[in-house]
Image (cartoon, rainbow, N blue to C red; front, side):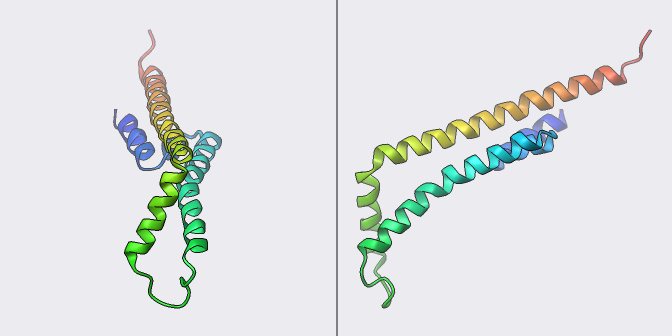
Length: 119
């Protein structure tokens, strides 16, 4: 039971970590890369657009209110894209957690069967 809970917790912390713990390394690395990309893609998108819309960004201190208003404008303009990316990320995360649970449960039941005395 501890193995199952630990695999779930690892997948909750980072999608793919539970798979790596369950010795499904290829699947774990793939889920980790996919979820990282889906997590950082909107951040990079917003930062590149903020940089192009605030001309005096390098010259000194920019008021946080300006950065926030530009970021909100970008998000509202492309909200359907951000929603799609967000829900895809959440789906990958849920998939990683459930798959870590089922694989850990399968591995635990196999190890219990191996330990059981045969008659």
